[in-house]
Length: 351
Ligand code: HEM
Image (cartoon, rainbow, N blue to C red; front, top):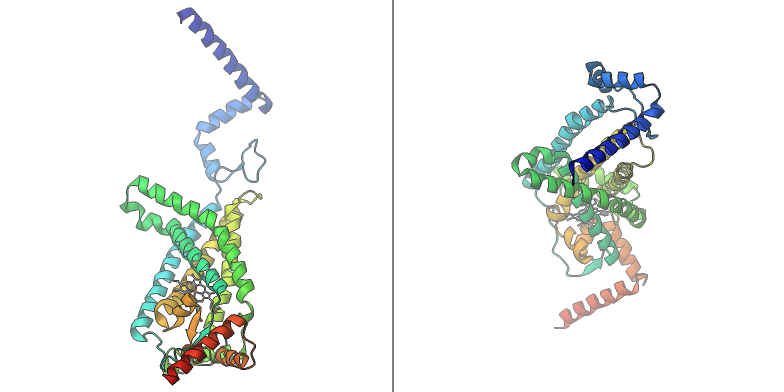
């Protein structure tokens, strides 16, 4: 390309860019305003005003878009980083420490009498599918959420930057997409188990005897319906704080409804605090389920519990089921199972 042609093209480009700059500035009106702005851009006063949260002008119509730096955000930052995050870490480690101490000092709750070998159906297939879906979703969300809050302290300094970037991106994506599923599961849990989770007088007596787990009441097996007082409390903890965590999570997930920065900050704090309360509560539940009570886990895995377990931990439910069995009110699957058990017992006796 000749030098002359290049010069002509450069001149045309210059002409176009001058026109377009002029047309961008034209709506702003006076050129001296633009000049003033340019001077302020470079000046300390301008940045002092920006840092002070002064609102400027912008073509965007969204709420607060004229504010470059939001000063009340500092309060949110302090509440989150200096209060919620350390207090949450203390609460989680405190809960873990307490269950370990409980295991070492009090030990797991064993059955007082021998197993009968006869079982009762406690959880249907649908119950178990719901429970384990909830457990998986909750635990993975808890893990990714804790990574988002605490990962910068316990992982970031020790791994290559690229790996850290990938881990935190994955945690964020997982949390954003799976979070709403947790909300749906909370609703299903509420619909499925609310009836048996209503508190009654017997539950307060259960609490007064500390569930028969410690002190002079240890091994006393206080009366309980299908769920005992502790399980009912846990259920409502899950429903209330689960709903709050899910709702505040949706506010954060979809910032398209004119939420202001204040709304997002409040949602962020409410989300974090409710999630931390749930995590601490479920440390105890998981301990009881996995190590703290003989025979509980097999119920949630197979659906069946031994009659000794039912009698010792949920005597009112045991009696109700036995009365139903006597009146022929159990469903066909349950009756078939009871017939099998009776048959097996009869065989044992004749052999
Ligand atoms: C490793 C993790 C877990 C284990 C081993 C476990 C174990 C159990 C067991 C054994 C039961 C039945 C207790 C009984 O028959 O009386 C149960 C019930 C239950 N679990 Fe879990 N669980 C786990 C995690 C979770 C999580 C993360 C949640 C929710 C966030 C959850 C929510 C529930 C609820 C709502 C019930 C029913 C309580 C009731 O109302 O009777 N579980 N779990």
